[in-house]
Image 1 (cartoon, rainbow, N blue to C red):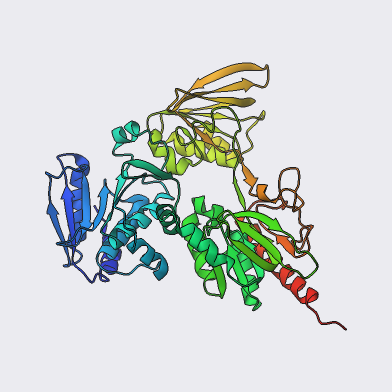
Image 2 (image 1 turned 90 degrees about the horizontal axis):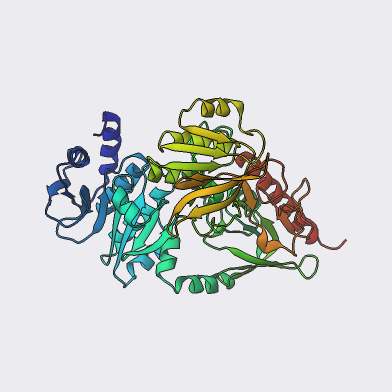
Length: 523
């Protein structure tokens, strides 16, 4: 099951075990059960602290296995064969059950330990999903820390009937005590905040009590990270408040164009950014969504940012780096069937549509790449492009047109998402060459039509373009004194990681220059 290279790497990790680990397998006669049995045997031979037993009479999914300590009730279970992106989740679960400490903050770990409500989490994942491991690992850790919490990570591609019965059309999808809890990437702090309902108010009160900062950065993507590092290196009091540290990069699969980094993926890049920020004295406030900006009453005065949680932060300068999000089609049915067939991540959700007909909306690079990836998984792909020609790179177009199970429809304006009340059944589009209305029968729609800046909360305060982008000059200045902006939320012409990072550095240097000039002593 594991090749020699993987065994060697895993063996090195397992040297960190300080407590015995027991793997309790529940199997049947199927091929996947044989794979699980072999996987557990491979793991057992790597460390004498690990034992394997079978309990095939247990009333749980088959194949699955529990990772626990002998004589305890630790509840970390995998249903399926956790390879692909989830192999890291398996390794971390083995280490944490075996006594290796987590790197999360002591405050957050204590918050998990103090949860007093019995919680059984179930996470449906796909092996190709790059967002799923963060959710799986967070919930695994919770079940290691607190005996009242259990977690089962379920390969949706293997348990297809359950996926259909529970109407799961996107991963990761999380249930708690049988009820739908959430979908999409979630960090440990975010999950704990949803469970511990008083956490947000306590955190808001704590944040509001902080003294004013020299520079407050709103947003935690590449632009925000670069701004934080450049500001902190100047020795000024720096804070970064982000809806999620890492930003849209967390949803990116492969990154191959960041200079000096040959290839990485979004979550790894985001983790590296966070690690770099933490090398400096930066006050990091994660899971904080900005709600409003109040400009300084006078030159050199304080600017205030209020968050959705009610926290209020003050600073002498502010850098806006709130990034962008996927653009919606804004047609009837899209909101109704979001996560019920309408999705935005082909890498994550593609395996859930195996053997089905789907559509991709958008003929740019993202849309054509999505169609190519999906063609290897689903039964048929229909790509719809509004314009009279595809906008993707020529090499991608050639690859797309070579695939036998792909149809391309140009001059197609999607007008409605159709469904039966529970899930998507098709879409309606207008042929822009003759205004004829047509329908396509399908079960999934992958929307890939670009980005929208996260600037709605700034309307009426900061000057925006007609497209909602923050207007800045070459140094990152907005129309408000002391307020700067950088990255995908601005009117820079190209939305790229390397450009956003450079813009963040520019904004930080401009903020520092502003501070020097507005606090200079009188002549």
